[in-house]
Image 1 (cartoon, rainbow, N blue to C red):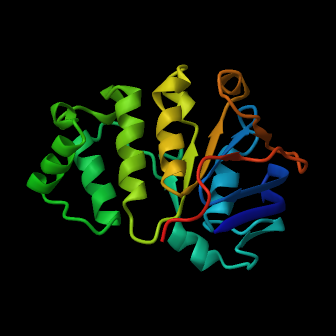
Image 2: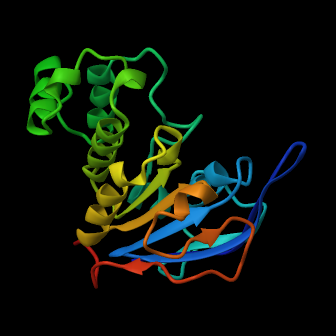
Image 3: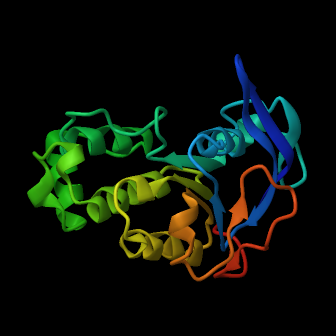
Length: 218
């Protein structure tokens, strides 16, 4: 599997939301994309996931322009103003919604059992914003990766919850090691602590993603 963005830009009603950006990521690879606030993190994630149509440029999946296939195979993780859990929502309810999207049992008991298996049962009644950042991100990543047909993850701005990337970087690497294509979008300051060059929003000449596994999940 290969997702490729070629000079993808997104315009809003008052100007550009994303300047032309190129990116390529395959199954088993982890790409880091960075930019200043307002540079288009969410817009690029939505375009790569087939949720919005670029104003110019194109996103392809295995060489084809197919937004429906992107929506089937690419999951957004905790994307601001898109699918981040609502303020005040209890963790068990947020996870219940995620498990429903993954077509898994989402009864109160099923959610509790899932959280227990994830060693997070003690947080079930906590408001999501009060759950430790590393737990929040881990659970949302695992739930998204469990959706049928998902072969790529867009992990959007996990550093907005914590300045310590070691709380989520191993999670992203683990999913790429499983064979998923993983894109993490974050702030420039975060990238200084990461062991791979970062692509930049608004640029078309980009470094290669970090290869963690050759091949794709079946």
